[in-house]
Length: 209
Image (cartoon, rainbow, N blue to C red; front, side, top):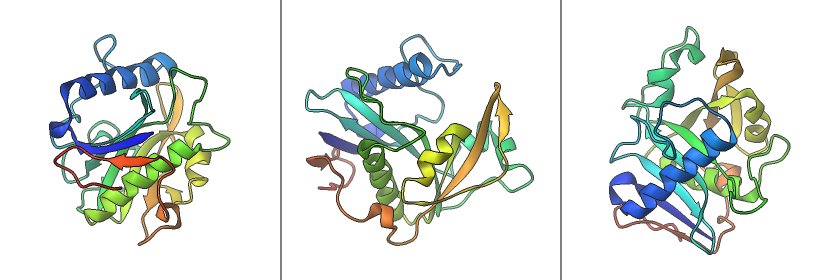
C-alpha cells in the first residue's frame, strides 16, 4: 500500500483522472450523493491547482481511499456552500483552520469498505493521520469538515478530539453537521507511523516516509 500527499498541480493526469473516477464511484455511485457533475467524474470548484490531496493506493495501484484539504482562507466547501451549518457563528477563515472534505476509505474492487459507522478502519485512520500531520506542518490547529450525522461516531472513535460546531441541519433530507477536529501538538491520533508500507508524495510536496 502507498499514500500520496500532493497538491493537485503536481499529480499526473492519469492519477487525477483516476481520483475523479474513484470519487464519482464512491460519492455518487455508492453513497448516492446528488452532485452536479459529469457522469463518471466527480470534481468541483474547490479542486484547484493548489488543493492538497491524500490518496491511498493498493499494491495494484488502485485507489482505495482519499481526502481533500483546503485552507479556510480560500474558498472552501463549508464556507461557500453550507454556511448554514455554522448557524449564527462566524464562518471559519483563518490560517490555523483547514477543511477536510471528500474523505473516503473504500476498496471498490474488493469487499472492504473502510468508512463504517461502528468502527473506523485502519485505512481511514491512516488517511486522517496523514491529513492532520500535513495541516499541522502548515500551522493548523483545527480541521473542520461537513459530515452526515452518521459519520459522527466514526470521527469520535478516530482518536482526535472531535465535537460539533453547531446542531445538525437537514440537507437533501439527511442530517448533516459541521464537525471540529482539534489538533493538539501532537495529537494521540497522529502518533506513530501509518500502517502502510510506504508514504510517498509527488515532487512538490514533502516526503512522509
